[in-house]
Amino acid sequence: MATSRALYHRIESRRGLRLWYDRYSCLVFLSKAKFGIALRSKTKTAQINEALCKVLAHNICCLIQSMFELNVKSEFWAQVVL
Image 1 (cartoon, rainbow, N blue to C red):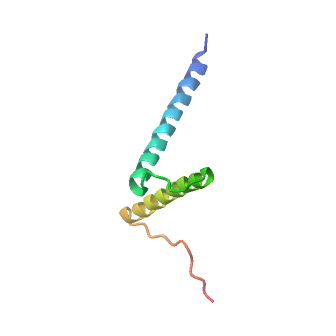
Image 2 (cartoon, one colour):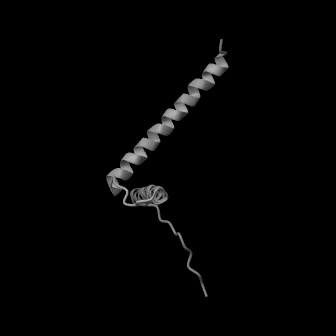
Image 3 (cartoon, one colour):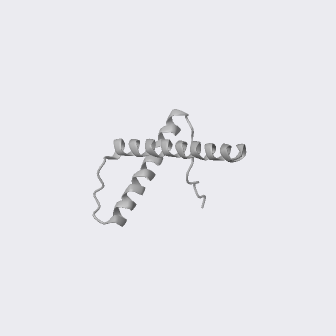
């Protein structure tokens, strides 16, 4: 018979998996809607790289959108004084 602590940890780990799955499926759905469903590369390695680039591009788009919505002024590169 499992103890209450073991049952608690089992339930919490399943909740964590569910939250991770929800975030992952949302990311996949949004990136497919924004950048298209098909991967154009032929080899497996190139397809993985293309999918990772789509995820990166989606994250950059979310960052830019949040910057405009929240009126955040950011400076990515400081000007070098010579």
